[in-house]
Image 1: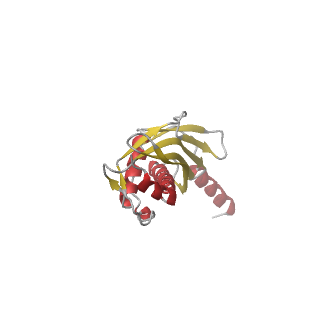
Image 2: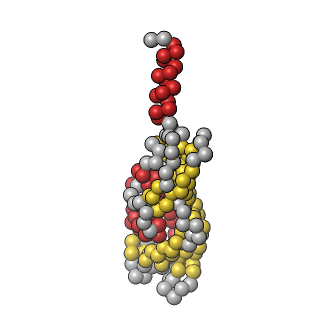
Image 3: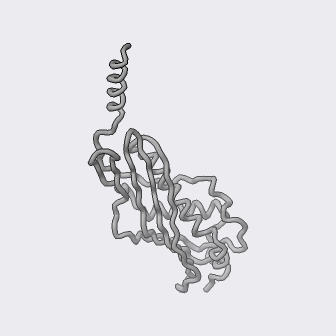
Length: 197
């Protein structure tokens, strides 16, 4: 085979793999437990939380954008279901993995979902980035706030363009990171013991 024929075949193969359109996506948020976060919180003297409440405080409900690196192609990404329910499932799972359990004597953990963003950068494959910002608050049954902290979690991955699985993996990893930033600090552990009526 001649050199020119090889170049033509290589060019055809590359163009066949190149993404030529970028469509909007709706991502079903589905939390999956990551056992690598188990035990990250460490020993707890107090481990009861009466309930977990999550409120979506975002003003911009768009999840993110898909952008082609070399063409003027761009599309929105939206969530196919309730982000607050997804965060709540993640928080409950991480708490359970780390030895925190439900009990009427414990404080409420109130979570505000402040930001939830994704970015997909497309070429032949895609780079996925996700960022989750949460504000966590421990509160007594009478409404007194004992502890409050705003945290963020980020994650990245690489894979096929427009992959629901890659979006879910990146979002779940970012959520796990944010939740661990809430429950790992000593100030949170101390507040669990002192946040009574």
